[in-house]
Length: 453
Image (cartoon, rainbow, N blue to C red; front, side, top):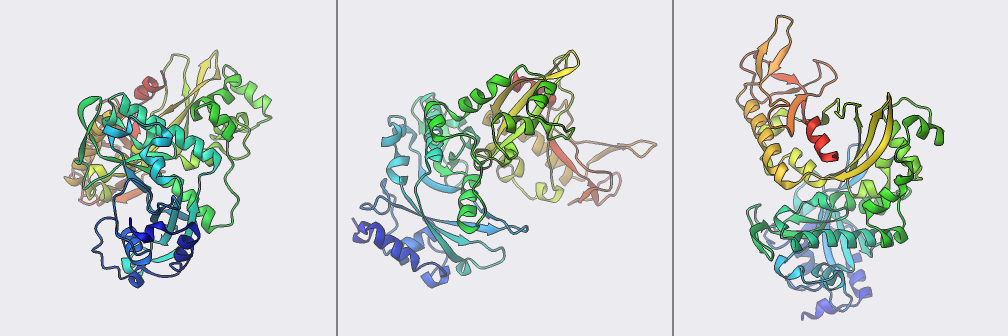
């Protein structure tokens, strides 16, 4: 064992302090550090030990793992983590035999020393500056959720479904793909299907809140659940338990109970917030922000149908053409986002709160039907074949995949008006237009109905 890996906690923190305010050029960064980039150079130049792939923490005596990660400043002056924090590779063949406290995750990552550097677009890597350090021990509420996340990942491996693991399965601790490319495949214990290599990681949304707590003086986010509630229930069970007393009540009854008078679209989210006894909007609560959970209200009509498809942010035509599916915004959105569907059912002319459902898109759907829609859309844009026909009144019909394309995902307009456009990478053949009305991907209403049962 390298003696420098046997430093005490105090010695480690003292050395880390000397890095604050220095750029990576100070540590002879040349871009040749292959194992972990900036992490490797900090290991070898600051702490003076050889980079390794040991199963234990970097500093064995102090039980501390070292991590180096970037953050960025947004246009509105807030700060965000630039990426997820990748921890250690998951060995499917071994990890399924462990419990949480003997797992490779806990063995390596009980205490994290995180060095943060500021990423600035256009600046050379060697000039990025290390600005903060954080010795991180998990808050009680976070720890309970992280344990639950670990069990969700391991239960999929034990079910022979390692190939179906998605980052959106969990809340804070995720299993992200890891390797030279997405084709890095590994054996799993209970299935002959090869699974992508994955590593434990903390989600970008989780890391963003660590950055904001460290860099700003703003008040901490308001939690929905306590550590005690999370010790006896899963996150989803605990949320359901709080809402159960209100199932079956009409919209009017709920508004009366919580003294809410509004016709705003946010009414349902406000009602849920009141039911959960939080002051802020549900989407601004600690767990929903850190876990990247998006609440969506669904109103089911008396005939059992849903009126509207579900929209997502407008896409940039040029960006779609220049991006691969694996790196696309659409794939990233569905692979990393969990949704909470808030279901209201109409009966006798009034909507009643029926249930909630947590859901994330299965990889089998994401990398098939949704991918097909995305690839077809990219093909249409890149070939300049968007407009199919123009009516006498000037209404344009497109070749984009419609709601009958595969009954999961399609493309429709998503603009304020016809002047709300994005530039095209290739002029449209039929109209010679160099820009076109904004469009976005939508989930089909029948697919949503299928999801909520």
